[in-house]
Length: 190
Image (cartoon, rainbow, N blue to C red; front, side, top):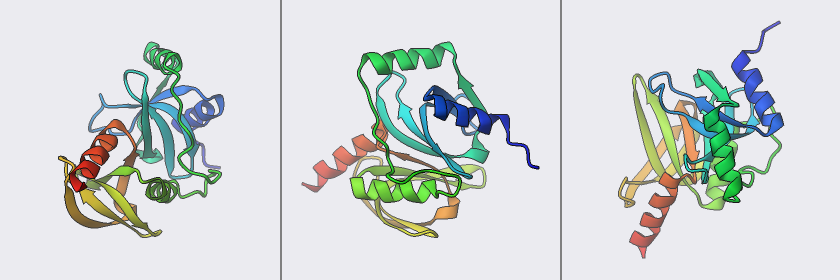
């Protein structure tokens, strides 16, 4: 019998209790965390309803479970974020419409939902020790590949990228960063 990690068990409990968690998904950046509500957990990924440090809606983040090396909950910071989120009447709808279980391909479902909802995404690719990322509009998704229309950091059209899905280490969608790029890109087009 394989014993489940304490981190995975904590994530599942926090999801069931609808409690805020701080997750730390990169040992290379131990001071960077994502804070919010766990929306779903599969055998490979989690999806989190992300909350900004000021308690505002901040889109969704998808992380590989194996990359999460620390989970904090019930502390002063999580309580502060919950207080701000609640006091400002913030809310998140579900990003994906399917029921999430261990077999769900959360990454693929989130990419397809982002395409339908016209969200800009950030795709993170782990290339040895250097993490690379792409911003853009999702144009097509298969089990093996993702096609995005890239957007530069200034919001300008920046060509197309075809990325192997297995190389994507993380995904953000509809966070403040992507919303800003969406506005800049749409404004630039008009």
